[in-house]
Amino acid sequence: MTEPVAVTGLGLITPAGEDAGTTWDTVRRGAGTAAAHDPALAGLPVDFSCRVPLCRDDLDRRVGRTAWRMSRNAVLAVLAAREAVHDAGLDARTWDGDRVAIVIGCGLGADAVREEQARRLAERGADMVSALTIPQIIPNMAAGEVSIDLGARGPGLAPATACASGATAVAVARDLLAAGRCDVAVAGATEAAVTPLTTTGFWRAGALSRRTDAVTGASRPFDADRDGFVMAEGAGVLVLERLAHAATRGARVRALLVGCGSTSDAHHPTAPAPDGRGAEAALCTALADAGLAPHDVDHVNAHGTSTPANDAAESALIARVLPHRPSVTAPKGVLGHSLGAAGAVEAALTVLTLQHGTVPPVANLNAPAPGFDIDCVTKEPRRQDVRIAVSHSFGFGGHNVVLALARAS
Amino acid sequence: MPDTYDTFRSILSSAFRIPEDEIRPDLTLEQLDLDSLALTELVLIVHERFGVKIDSAYASRSTTVAQVVAHLDTLRAGDTGAVASS
Image 1 (spheres, each protein chain N blue to C red):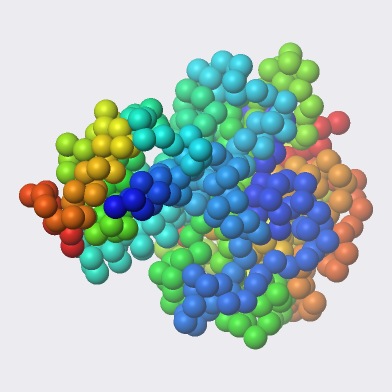
Image 2 (cartoon, rainbow over the protein chains, first blue to last red):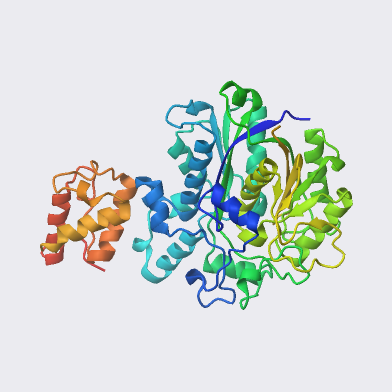
């Protein structure tokens, strides 16, 4: 069993809103955010997506002068991190930056930059390739820009476990705190990979919804008619501290991170293990880490991508390990799938579920798939006294990460 | 070419988010906070906008805005041995 750590700050920038508050309001209503005819995807078989509702100029203006050198995913990370630090009541101008860790993951990184610069190289030659190419596409640069922006000089890491990256970042940050490597950890993930090549790649892999004629209903986790996920972008950041540190400075504790479980399927590059053994081990490890039993779980934030394979395997896992039918939600129905960022975004939403005692509905879940014996919240938010929640994140490569969170009081 | 300064100032403002009212001819690129990465990017952007390539001697932190503009005017007039436009 590992000592719990406090979640004292949240920052979100998602298709559902430009901060944690607006994102939560939209997710709580179960309002889908997918929009047709994304200009970046024009002419492709799947051309719809979920986008952050701010243009690049607006984003850059918020970041300030340094935005000129940042890729979109770094900009999103910096804004979410600033919000989280502010929300925690911390001040990056006065804190001891040597004791602040930055753990910001991603699934893909700055793919828009990679694709644009590859095109420039092919069409216009080497002289027309930007000097920013490498600084922008390396997957750790969002973490680097956040550390620069916040003056955080402690450990800096950029986990990449595909669609589990955000959850991995939170788990790694917890471990850094537990080991005494830092006093404050700014942890999360970012993704801005709604690009022609990335989208086409997921389409070719059969992972995307093809519901081009009804895009707002395209992401429908656990629904009988689900046919894939919807490309999305965003960033989510949490501020974590040891309980004693949070108490010493009188910080408001939003929730407790009480357990983390990380495993690998060792089965297949993209398909979840059909028996769900890796995901189950992650869930059981997180609960054991927290000193909890399965029946203690009141609520599950499911990975719930809306792909046939994920949702089938995950519903079977929940029904098998948590047969007491805790409530289940899946924010990707509202937000689409922000890939590497999703695990951090959803960890933050799970914190808000614990705080508010409200479970958001799964958007577009009209007819649960036959045989899915789980208690999905549908249509309306559900009031529930949630004391313990788990958040699932699974990624290509067979990565399984489960975070166990507890209400603060 | 009287428009060179305005265009160059516009590039500095849009590409590097420097407020236009903070840009003056007598300021060096260093005083405008352009680092080595920014200078390399500036050469590329100017190449695209003006069709000429700033000589490396001018793409330095100690060069003033006025000096770069004068260099660009010279290049655009075609009376220099500096790198030709693409």
